[in-house]
Amino acid sequence: MGPPGGGKGTQAEILSEKLSIPHISTGAIIRNAIREKTQLGIVAEGYIEKGQLVPDDLVIDMVSHRLSQKDCENGYILDGFPRTLPQASAMDKIGIKLDAALNLVVADEVIVKRLAGRRECKRCAAPYHIDFNPPKVDGVCDKCGGELITREDDVPETIRQRLDVYHQQTEPLIGFYKEKELLVNVQGRDTIEETTMAVLDALGVKC
Ligand code: AP5
Image (cartoon, protein in one colour):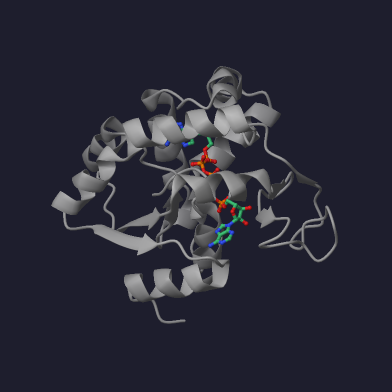
């Protein structure tokens, strides 16, 4: 968990490689559905463009389907799900058990700067930043050679809306997971590497 641009995707990608388990980003699945113009993508597009959350029932179905696939048998890292109390309750009902709910704590002012410089691979969705995590070759993904693009929801007005939605609808999950003794808070640091060290330390992961 964490605010938009808080580093969830970046840290999830690093952890996924270190632990050899899939990184499941609901945002990436939805953006892919939009690109492929699937039924989900057609419905979701209007919500994403406005910085609003996609309806719970659609996202819950999408995640249940993804977690039933073979590569999830030995665990997975959820990025961006659950994001509302109904999504968290649905997860409990489906029987999805969490080892930890990692919460990246980052101030709103830092977010705006990070999102303005973010780039994402059009093909594999790997995250980059023009200053803090640049690719080796300008505009090209280090991992798959795909084109790097700016996300459509990374414009100032939509970023503000996403932050509002985060504070109203997702922040209550912090209390929800604290009560369940699953909450692990990590203060986001000035560099990706320092944040990774703090995340691994907080989760007790040795790599
Ligand atoms: P989603 O894709 O999940 O977007 P988000 O939550 O807004 O988060 P971001 O992907 O923007 O940021 P991040 O925290 O992953 O940060 P990142 O690592 O990229 O969701 C998009 C939309 O889909 C939502 O608005 C909603 O409409 C819909 N959606 C998704 N899930 C949903 C759900 N469950 N329910 C309903 N709707 C849903 O880092 C940001 C930048 O900062 C990068 O450039 C990175 O390189 C850089 N950076 C990261 N860490 C550091 C650091 N420590 N120091 C310096 N730079 C850093």
